[in-house]
Amino acid sequence: MSMRKLSFTATALALGLVASSALAEGPGLGVPISEADIAAWDITVFPSGANLPPGSGTAAQGAPIYAEKCALCHGINAEGGIAARLVGGEPLTTGIDVGKTIANFWASATTLFDFTRRQMPWQAPRTLTDDEAYALTAYVLALNGIIDEDEEMNAQSLPAVQMPNRDGFMPRFPELMP
Image (cartoon, rainbow, N blue to C red; front, side):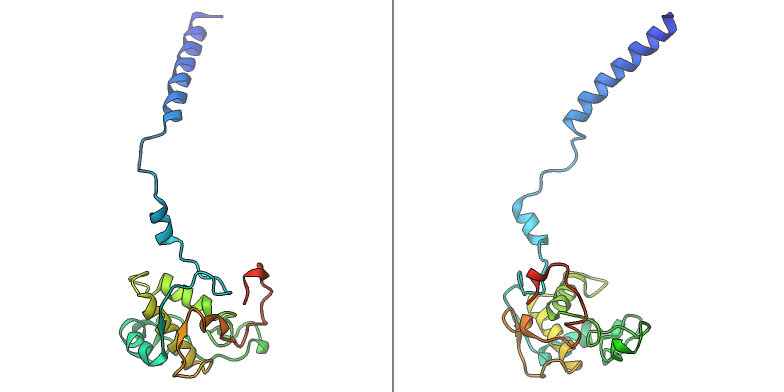
């Protein structure tokens, strides 16, 4: 073996040993996450109602919250604006190109709650209290005629709401369905 190849091989071996010991230690970035930190983000609500938080709200309580935090994007009466329409919609049986709304597409009222609490308002997600999320959910459901305006939504009543398109899906996890 030539001296050049030997020198190259020795250098590569030395670099490999140094790199492997450095990688074994890790880059030293960040700190381990605590169980409390994980719990703060583990907020998924399932169709069965599992993981719904304490709290409650009615459509009447949701109306002023909607006007303040939602109407700018979803329109005054939830009929659409720069964001999706939330009310009405033809039955999906009329074709695939029908606009999908809460009333004609969503299979579970708990999904509406979960999405609202997790993603809305778009410019400040996760800023709604649980009571505000329940009230907004009740408001949108009442606008769609799915519940009465005076019905209170909470961890017990929300999973019992019968959505119009509840049978339009084949659940991937049937054990999580109400």
